[in-house]
Image 1 (tube, helix red, strand yellow):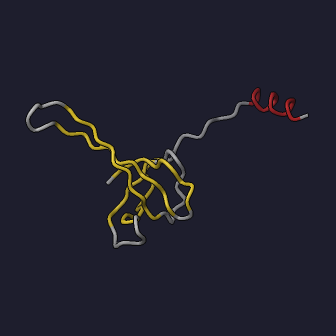
Image 2 (cartoon, rainbow, N blue to C red):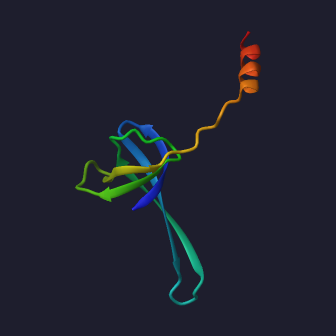
Image 3 (cartoon, rainbow, N blue to C red):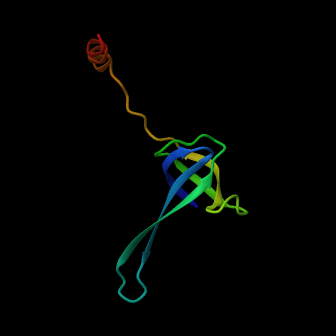
Length: 92
């Protein structure tokens, strides 16, 4: 399963959102459902990363998934030199 990390505030655990898009069997409307699961993380994922998770044995009461690999890192906000100048003047 491929999902996006929503939270990385726990130790060695991340919360991953899994988006599923399907067509309703009777009404043929496109339905989006989001499920959040907790996954064991040894790779050091951050919030916003796109990860691949696999099912595993129960690791705790709620953890049944393990992060297999990080597909795409989250884009970190770039700080320009002008922003650094403004930040340095504010701190003095």
